[in-house]
Length: 145
Length: 95
Image 1: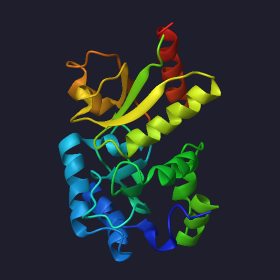
Image 2 (image 1 turned 90 degrees about the vertical axis):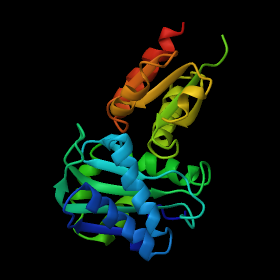
Image 3 (image 1 turned 30 degrees about the vertical axis):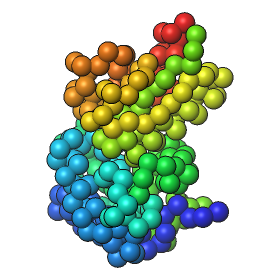
Image 4 (image 1 turned 180 degrees about the horizontal axis):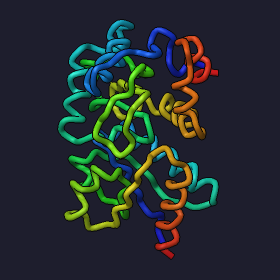
């Protein structure tokens, strides 16, 4: 089975000074692994500025993403960071400890990826479990095993 | 009655709305209910023909005054129990 989040797209206990920085850190992993271009990060941040913190889907967890974009996204992909210090998005589900970035090229190519990650994330206490991971290896196994 | 069309809405119609749609699909299947589900973005969702809109609290504020179908607000997209209760309540309201 194809992995949901590649090891190089995972980081734990990342320092972020605010919610924008948290999205940048999670997005930077996808830049470094050549999945997205920098402007995709700006669009994810602009999305929250414009539409509000609805991306904080549940207690402690934000799903950052921008509109599908073939020019800025090389292939559908996910990254995930856990934060050493939680950040506020001004959401009822603050503070946020886990940020996942979704990069998509269109509205359908990432469907299979999302359906599999959604199943993982609907598990009870999963956010707690993710924040307890002390290494990216450990988090990789929680997500992909 | 025809299958109801449920539109799941988020900012761009491809991320959180998709997670919600998948959760709803699972619930419908589990309870042997039939509905068509699809994703929309908050900017264009009002133009899509549907029978109900499932949406997060803060985005709901943007559309609730203009919507001419029931708007079901989901507080926590990953709370399986909340999504199940609200999906079933909506489906029951159609009977």
